[in-house]
Length: 326
Image (tube, rainbow, N blue to C red; front, side, top):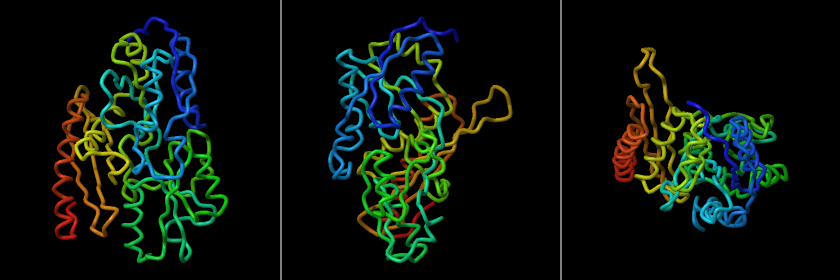
């Protein structure tokens, strides 16, 4: 594919250190294709409200609304998002135009003194901002017989969360590994949690680029940045979340891995797993999985819908019998 005609582009971005890194990364890639790119830093509602859980004040859209206004008003041409912060349904007139190659999608265990969950002292406190992480951590703590460990809310940007840990407010916190790695803070990762230990959130580790629907020129410019296996994977994950009514108030995990087949010209296989737990009860975590050959966003979406249907059945079974179907 030949490069699109050079454009003058402005990227709307949040002003946290991680968000600015992401925007700078996209700017560098676009500049390599001949485009002239500026940044428009913005503070969103999600950045301003730090004393309440996102699930109680409006959810994922709090991190993107102001950026969408900048796109609508013509002050910016594209917005770079952490895809797990993007609502499952975009407002009319906006499109997800690009999904880039994924960074590490896993969660990271961050602690100054304790290597694993098993090593926590009596009455320890773990910090997390995610209902998904809370439910999955609780499941593991129950398996260890550690009813004494508390899971407490943790808000703020990456640096704020790490500062609260260093001040001793928590014995450990759980963060996305991608953010730490992008900011070259790998030394803060005590352990990376495999998906078998803690299934990631839909879109975790992936960057999505949003544009106005009436901007085919920007869509064309972004084609060179697309990583299709990542987009198929996150499309399946987001389809699960959309079907389940996914938001910050939904304790849902969904993670897909695309595996190419050795035969040339054959579509690869997308393996998708999802999990749901009830934060208000001790019912088991429901899980579902499936795989399919996928070579388009439509096929990825269909796989996500199928897994969501299985997860709904497993969820109902867990609630009724407290025995989880896998």
